Amino acid sequence: SENNGPSKAELAEMANFVKTLNVYPNPSVGEMIVDLNVSTDATVVLVDMFGKVAAEKQVFAGSNSFKFDGSNLPKGIYIVKVLGTELSKSVLIK
Image 1: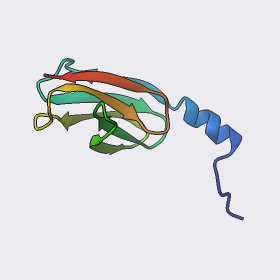
Image 2: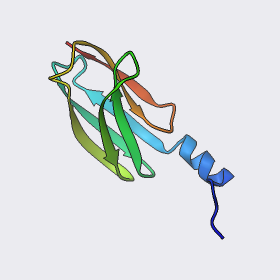
Image 3: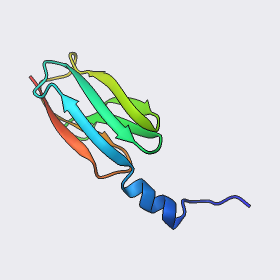
């Protein structure tokens, strides 16, 4: 039979599945590199201070390194967030 939701063990694992999250350079003039180590597939988003998603990237379990291009975004503070977790990093685009 199909399980309609995650088990308690899966929920506990999801709560701490992000091992590392680094964003650089910070401040950025637009392009930023995100280094991320997760124990399961995840979605990483770049959101502005109004909560609008400016960029989104699907990542797989393990080490990931990718670029968010914010060169076309207004200057300001953005948040790089791993969906489903409390983990986030602020980045200034100037």
